[in-house]
Length: 334
Image 1 (spheres, rainbow, N blue to C red):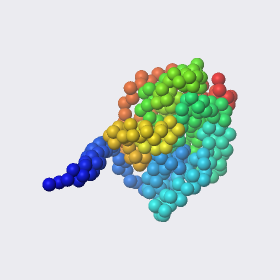
Image 2: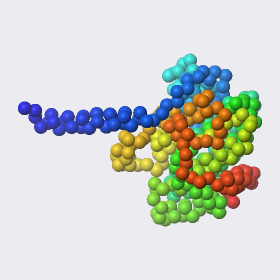
Image 3: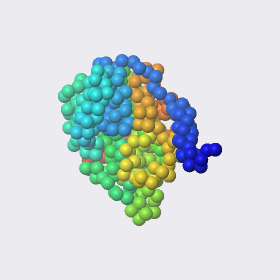
Image 4: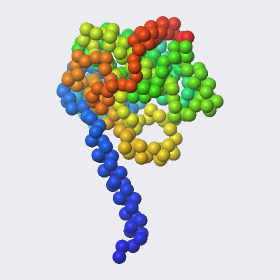
């Protein structure tokens, strides 16, 4: 006769095995980038390459012999990431750490100046870096822009537009904008791009912390920016696309998620949350797969085109571009 203690001990093991099988079954639907073409001689620039999706994207590119520029706010962390990759891939492509703070126009300008002095062309620019912070903290960029708007959109807007000539020299080349399907929850209010109203509501506790309008709005701006840039670069050989890595386990939400949230979200995490490596597959696909060369202005998820629920407005697209240019030139919020 089996004792009750043995039965009780077996139950957790059975549950763990069952959950593992469910996750394995679920992950079969998460596509992988099948292109494994050698990228020797090509230069990839990744913002935020020292951790999470950026790090896994860099690993995949280095494995394909690419030269990768790690554009990171903390150069020490970039060097640590490079050391880690070198241990795993001693014969991979060249890795170059460079300092870039997307929350500072001055830093962006210095970075671009150094890149242009050291590189004749950039084959692929991957706008990966992003922030997700509680709105109640009311954080700003160096120029005073709301942090999500200033980093996730405006910083990458400025960086990309200043690197366009290097991208054209590498034609056929690509810009990959890492967005999210959360862009479908965003809205663009040109009267309050810095979210003064939302921030006040958040400070007063009238907005749930999990509802981050700053992040969702910036992801919508990412897609509008991608569409506008794709139109402007049509015929130049520079493809511009956006993608959603999916719901991934990274440190993006480190300022908003507490330990008990992980327990509450465990069932969802098992079914839907990807690892950073799994999430990076779509980024690598957009950056390297030759089957989509010449395709521009599109949005991808799970290594295939995704149809957004947003009814994109050309007038909003053009206005966002114009306003962004004006804000960069003025160097201060409206």
